Image (cartoon, one colour):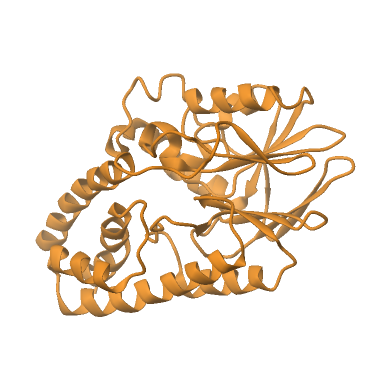
Length: 314
């Protein structure tokens, strides 16, 4: 594809961001109740009851794990406003200190609330690539938050807080009476994705390795490695899985995610090699993909950022 042609696709990509945002706004999220939901003793998931929108982190999930020494927070949502709400709900459950934040990956809906926790003394832990990616993209993404449907009012007080404790493969956090395993996935949903595993409770926080009921964002992913990561999780001793978006899940949802990814990748490659008509490509993908009620706009967003970009570079 010529440079002129690719520039046109970049313009369409910006438009697709709006489609992405509007798609979230129009759909409902999964949580049955506000605030924290107990998964096991001292382990909670966190989701919003409002409709999924940029303002409530696109329906992103988070969670907390409470030990004798304090609290580990899994992801921090999209803004200072959202993370302050999260902190308030945490304090309603426990008065123990916020010891650590674990970022499951570097995307804005999981990390832009970091500063509200770091200023309260929490150490932010993440994969080493998360730090690299946030330093590369964080400030620019915050500055251009309007591209994701976020206003200055939505992002008021939001500051980027980078991970200060990083690792490459695995790390353990000893909370006292609770050991938490952080497991790097390799390049799955992103090149900085991390699983948060509680082996004694058979609970896994999967981050955006798993979307349940949502069309996933694929643009930063490596499908081959992503599928391998899902196979690894399927072999683990896990009963409850907290996805990055969607309700608390099981291995059945992981199998469905795996099948979705393989179907999307195969069909998207075929369509993008044969045509550059974005409407045709999206319409055909919708016909071939499993039905998911949430975030249909991410189909177009993923095609634009991954598959058509790859074709343009040939």
